[in-house]
Image 1 (tube, helix red, strand yellow):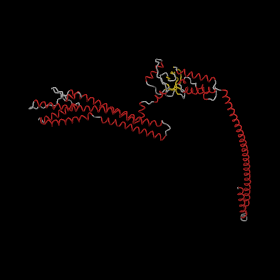
Image 2 (cartoon, helix red, strand yellow):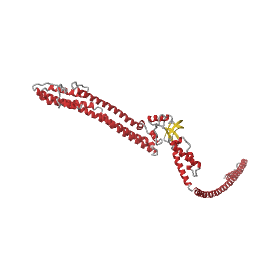
Image 3 (cartoon, one colour):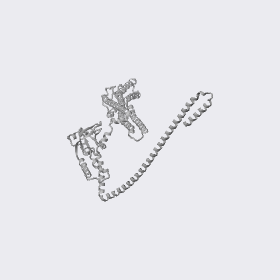
Image 4 (cartoon, helix red, strand yellow):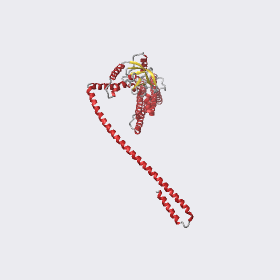
Length: 499
């Protein structure tokens, strides 16, 4: 295309030059120079095209050569595949023949070898989980033939027999040996370990050790048993005693003990609501103890006052009630000296007595309503914690699914522990509220009985004085413990047993 363009340009120039030849004769030299440049450009373009053509032909020949080589390799591969396939079929046939020959020659020994391998596999599982393997760490390599498809050798059969005897013998031994023990902080320390059969292992400090069957090493339990068991293990290691607590499950019970949360961990699982419940419970128990002591001392003062009715005191409920009754009696006698007004006077005295009793009831029942409120609020807070815990559980399920139960354990623990704490707080508060309320009712009933008995004694004294001296009236205050002997049917006598 470049060649044709240059030719067309040259013809246009020549034509244009011929048309303007008569007008501008001085430009002939310039046209000749331009013609020479066009010819040179045409020659260069032809050389470039020839070079590119030669390169293309060379590349084409190279690709044809590569294609020929690839076809030859493919043919060789197909021939090799056919040869390997024939060889595989021949080996399969020979293997079948050899297996039949082995089976025919072994006879009953084939069953024996099968039983031996089965026993070796069972023993391998036992040795893998046995605490004794820490003392003999290379035992599993001697029965590696259990997973191989071959006939065990005589040495391997003898090794299986030896391992069986070793395991049975070591089960009844109490033995000490050196071993690397993993501490709770992850550091390995060489310690002298004392093993009690396949059940328990203790170190120099009397701590119980756990056997890790995966890594085949001993580890110190993160949480050890109680102080008495720990001291017993220390004494057993020192040889001071022949008694030791043994875990028949080979460490599983001690591991469960380590996983069991303490009371503080249980409370921490309940979260903020759990601490609020405990705070309310502690405050409620303090209030209950305070009111119980107050009621007890009030009852004690009432009994002391009953023994000294002649000396009334305003520091106890009975003294205040009787003082109010005496004050009302004196007021009525002063305002109504005639015996004909005794019924009205008695009614006024009873009103004053009821008023005094009503004043004592709030003092005795002080705090009971608050205790009842706390006993009702504690389970409700536990229910609130249950709801919030389940909300957290469902949020974990929404985000992470149910693949990992540990993600849901926190919410479930909070839900359960808040309920437990709420009930543990509410039950004692209910019992203390019932106890204090019963004692308060007893005191109120006692005050009523003594007050009514005092009024009854006044009526008896008034009636007896009226029969002895009908023309003489003598004002008197209520004195249930007068110098004259009380009759056997006196109401005050009936109250003495209650006091």
